[in-house]
Length: 86
Image 1 (cartoon, rainbow, N blue to C red):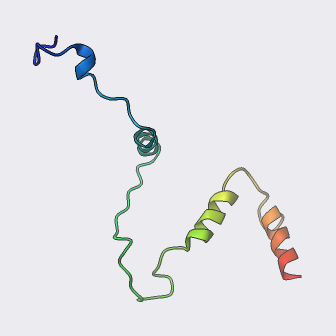
Image 2: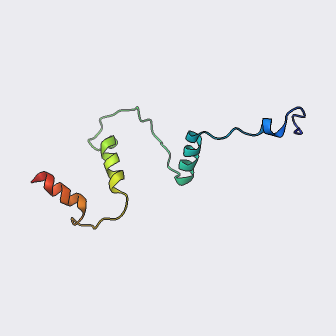
């Protein structure tokens, strides 16, 4: 029994277990205060630097952003770029 529902058992009034998606959302919210502050469906052509980055570019940046690399052209990514342009 609970005070507000004398006919219900405590197990019947307990909150349901969070779904995996809800747990992921809660972890993400706890890790960052970032919020989308624009309408991503809105399109405009005010300038060549007006639009967001292409999703593949953003994914590549995220992959490169894990760990440490030597700076100023001595990193593995610059070496690969030199191979691409040879």
